[in-house]
Length: 350
Image (cartoon, rainbow, N blue to C red):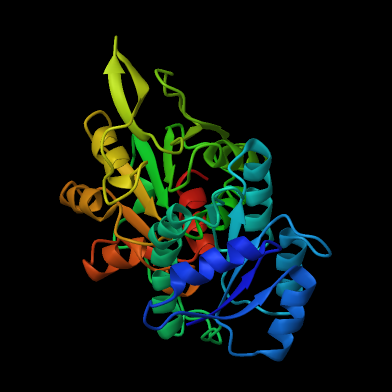
């Protein structure tokens, strides 16, 4: 996989190159100081597979560059590096909305040239590159879309199923998928919605605020410790906290914990669903685009209880990891793109 690194800091460009060097099948083939230079390189080099890009750059910043790439029809994956701050979180959400597939908090300029920064990039950036390499090798990215086919009917009758709660899990590509999902959510299900998206602190709150603005039917917020869980509210797990459900004084409440990571992540979809299952017996489970297999173990248990599982299909996923694991285990009751999933949900409460 051939990578273009876009950053105005020579120190950070060098750190990324050193972190990637020696990883078989992945190489930095070009670097750019700003967005306009990156666009010029991509117009000339048609074999670049992925771009990493800083958001703060002269001439043409990261968000403007992403928008221009999409306008030009250059749909290769983009990973953005963002400052770990409130302002950085806001810009990251804007970049993801503009068409970036994933993001990483950027190490500080003071640390970016050190061995610790290179080690951090190896631990954080390399796994994402390896996953995208697998996607590209499977020709999921940039391949022509197949002709539309008839959507298979759900395996169960959703209209007669009465859930107590809805679970949603997502990771890489999730913010854009969630934006599309909640922009089409028009019904009040009369039950709470619990949502885990793999994201660091600060970023989850910005995502919740964005989703709340586009979905009048629901109240969407970042979950807070001890708050009562209300119907027609969506609770987003905060970054670096598992979100669990506890029953206290006959009231279902949010419990945020920092116990060890599950599936190498915190928050984890498995933790959310397993905890919720102790309180809410009937659930609808929605697993969207994302790397890894988070959610698989919990969905195995949900399947045994005949609780419906809906997954995003391969063609519409940025990474068909989490839903793909469920599909390989043949646990899903329905598989479709976001539009099709929302038709099922809206129809259930129409």
